[in-house]
Picture (cartoon, one colour):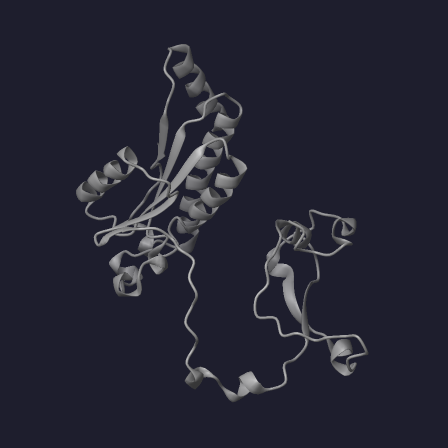
Length: 247
């Protein structure tokens, strides 16, 4: 597929035409909500393959067009709570549609910094006519935002915020129990399905020593090196100084 894009780019440049904008709409299917999981996964893979082939073709050439990747309903849960739809799969809502493509786009924004990539999510993709008009206006008059959600209620962009404290009523007796020490391990590298939690019986039986401190971990950030190591793509020497936190 990348060769096809490269040939098209060469033909356009040979004719004296330089594409300024590329819009990814290929494979945008609004009927996947009721489809089997395998069909939905194949559709996401196909859309991602088109994007990757285009990016690779651009990287091999001197072409640096603006790239608009258009998805549908991947960011429903990022809308303000009153605007989040309550529709079910039977109503056509596919909450997994284009989620993988959005993730790939975020990675590509970092890996292909010479290109101007933007993500547009149509949270209410039907009817097509009004959405096409809104989409055209967004592309003709862009701003600095590179991730935009377009809905019938307006235009939204992702923002980081502090989540409110959970009500104390949701706390249970189990939450106050002495936690079991566990460690994340794998019995064979190569796939995330091989990851499992093991009870750390040795550490559980050992009291803290002088100079040791035990902390309760609520969240952790992973370096991509951790992912590669879990997949068996890196030797042990690559993590001998520790896993994440070096970037």
